[in-house]
Image (cartoon, rainbow, N blue to C red; front, side):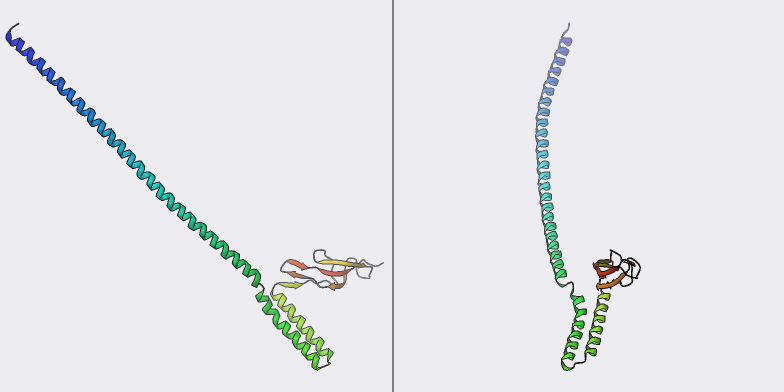
Length: 200
């Protein structure tokens, strides 16, 4: 083995040692860098979670405020509807009453006429006209009289107080004690009647 070969081996050994030291330095630096990066990533993640949580809190607050506003609006609407319903019940018959008032005026005039005159015939005509006018008012509101006399008894519209053997066909109404009325298609008062039981 000559001096040249020894020198070469020494140089290669030194080179390997330098590379090993360099690798160790790089590994330590990379480890340090990786730890810093992990810490930075964890910090960034915590910040993002905190921001997301804060955003959720803000949204929840907004939704809750919207819910409270909607609840208040519903309550106000309910109060308004209740108030309107009460007013409707209280004043709903105003139009009908206004139509009936002239009929009362007619009756008062008929009464005044009897005080200055003994004309019973005129009084009777006045009352008859007043009743006719009142029926017209009721008709305009959807109220109709139930026709009874000579009609066949119908329990939907008539209430029989008496049954009497009569020349009229059986089940025919022969007398009306009280007139009945229908509001639109609903019976509000049946006619009180006497019904024929047919010939004895």
